[in-house]
Image 1 (cartoon, rainbow over the protein chains, first blue to last red):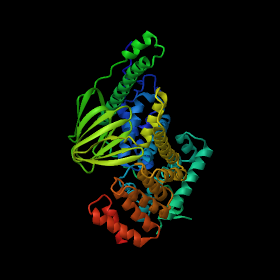
Image 2: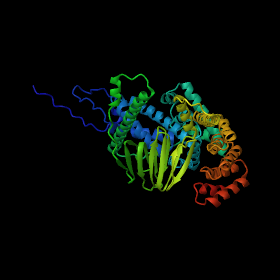
Image 3: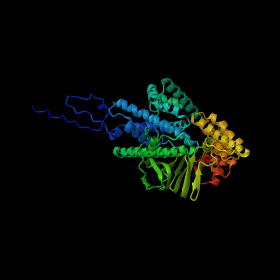
Image 4: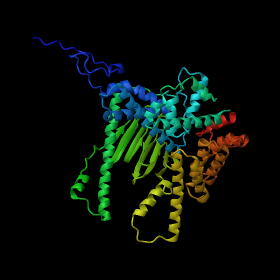
Length: 197
Length: 346
């Protein structure tokens, strides 16, 4: 009796829709290879970087956070988790590291004599001039708000996350997330009014 | 409805990513190198602490740790010794000295190099105004723009910085300064708040049979008290309560006007009032205090610029403009010159 010919699958860089499929499409399918750090990086680094960009606003800090997230992923992530869990893991770790970075930034701002940063690269290319100006002013005002309030506000109003997801990413209750978003919003309105001509 | 609320009613703010991707293979190599170096530095710190604990334990005459544990501590895994030289992508070079020195590179990108140093090293940094190059020790951060300088760790929390060429900015909790070619210093300074607090804590632990003199006791109390006040202010700011930082900062320069920390406290008060609380008039007075307490000190120039800004924001336009002109007359190419010209052009 001849053995059935093996079914060969081209293992391309892992794309999100392909993960999470039942382990065997057919009895003869090869087990799915565990994604390497490179494939994870190729897939999730843009997401991590975009999230970090919106929370931190500064390119030099974003590079650092991206590297740190994947350094933690070497040990912290079980590669066989499904894509939603993986994205959730990357999101939580990114938020945690960004929050830590914001706290360190405020610590060093006590003595930093450097000029305030410019946020002119942040607004989306498609934004109107008014929106561009608003984004830059918002980020300057966000620098004055404590990280525990700033981060949930950014996740809600820049990243566009639902409050339940904001709470999950920030590892707090829904009520706490709502309270912090509201507190940050009040402060932002106040600081923006001060700056208004 | 505010402009922000009107915009958010249309959808989230549109903010793009500011990240420049690199090829995954290269990125992963950098990530794995970072992990190895971080492990090496942690292992070096553990090894040093274990050795110190052993020595300290013997000095204090405590009950000896069981021999097997001592042997384990003494033979903790020896980390890979850092290469004596470390070259960076832009041609900058770090030369480690001393057997236990270690350097961990936390970031090495075109816009930013951040290294963490344990021990001593000499740095030769390529001039590049668009790149930040930082060296961090336990309590001190040194930021450079193309220079040759050396850093020596002095004890657990201080670092000596010597500049051969160029200029560096040295910062620590409670203060900052700039060093130019030929200058050197140990930081945080001896009279610095954080160091005084730590020293006070160490002093309490160490047995001292000689009773202090009355003036020593008064000086020690003053040092600790000013340090405690600065610490209270730092803590208040870190927990997001800037209003709670105002009183301790004022007390530093009101009670101890001749203390070297007094201008730092006044300057920090100005920043909190202006940047965190929007109280421009009071901020202007604080910046004025900072520069008059130490007219030739390292903060006087920045205090002048910030006072100009605060006066204008407080509605004292004429006074603010006078100060801006004063700044430009003395420092036409200074760090705040562009901002002062903008202020005058309004």
